[in-house]
Image (cartoon, rainbow, N blue to C red; front, side, top):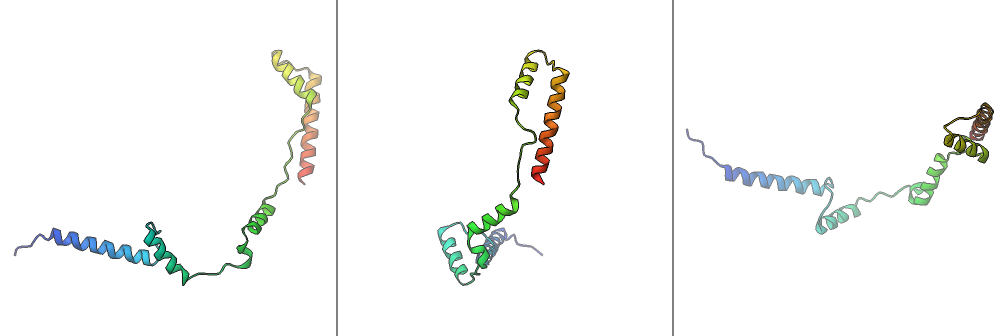
Amino acid sequence: MKIKNNSKDNCENTKDLERKIYATLRAKGLIIPITAQEVLDAETLMKGNMVELPKELRDPEMILNRAKQKLSIKSSPLFSSNKEVEENLARAAREDGNISPEIEERMRKDREAAEKKAKNARE
């Protein structure tokens, strides 16, 4: 028994099947429209299937404001800016990094106070 090689027929059948699959997926809205005609077809299809948004989703500004309220976070610096401390640190950095014990103690106290203030502001 001799089997015929129908590769040309198979190729045509495959192309036809692909066209049918594509058309079906497009008709069901499962493929994003690309051409102008596909967009028009999709819009026509959508007109009959429109779903009305709930009132709370119709105003985008209201949605954004609600999201901002939920995400609002009070921010405060972890430590306060103290000009004298900054100058002392800069001087110490220029002078080989030697910071006197008095300055170190003052810096530590300033930082603790600033952290305590920041913690209280967050609560």
